[in-house]
Length: 145
Image (cartoon, rainbow, N blue to C red; front, side, top):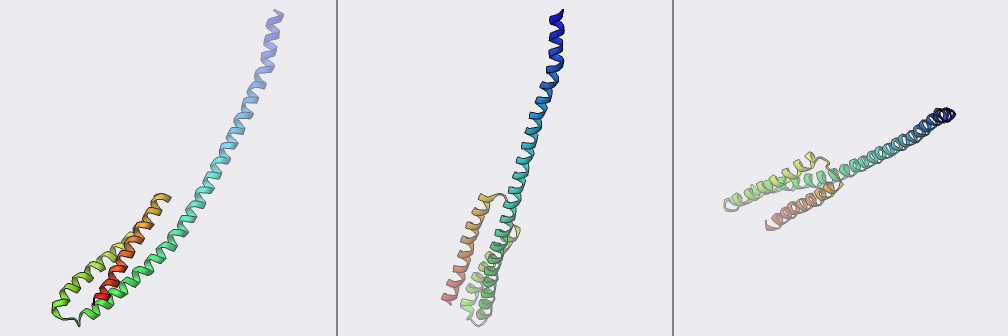
């Protein structure tokens, strides 16, 4: 009987201590998890801010190049008016194609939606290639004239 009372006494004292110990450990884990989440959120905000800045710079540069292309295209249109009928139709067709490519680039940069760093880097590379292609075609057209 005394053994039963001793076991009960040990359980009565030990069980609450065990539960308290578990709760302290659980609270520590919760605090650590909150800290990890806070750090991840901060890193995400920093990454988003960096992307926003990079995108704005890239977009501004692209818009400047697109505007320069538009200006060149308009100059060609004016010059084509004085060309002979034989060349005029061919020139107008080429100018229309260049103008369409330039408009597509403008639309592409405006409608781009961020989908991750790798996709953003791929977009920039591909966009720059297309931009360079249109710029070269305009220069080549001007040299042909």
